[in-house]
Image (cartoon, rainbow, N blue to C red; front, side, top):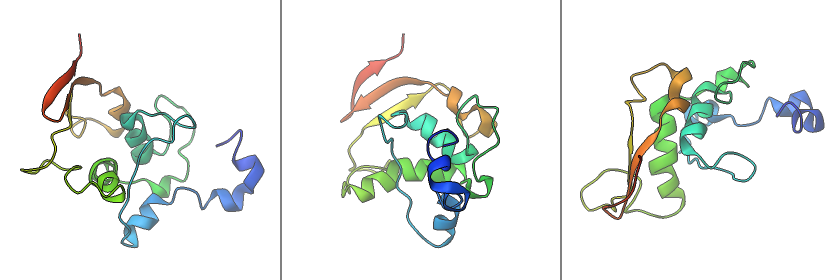
Length: 136
């Protein structure tokens, strides 16, 4: 943002980027995902940025801190919101009858400080109800 985007679009337009909190307040349904290769494909990193408005381990000032969203809102955007925008009605939430693509995390990332969201690691992955990855 600081090196490539803001110098080109200017500070006035930069203040209008990624207005997640304002969109949510206006009643918009948020859908989130990675924009790889421009950003990280890691949803945990994306959730960290949405909640903290800065990259993991950054010492910079948060980008438009008034546009932070709550962790539960970010999780919903990456799960149910992404399912909704992709018309995948049988995914995105843990509901009887939905497809069971899940990850198991090494911690309750909701219990720790927001600055540590990016430290959360995936320990197992299940696709269609079957384990496909287990961390060593």
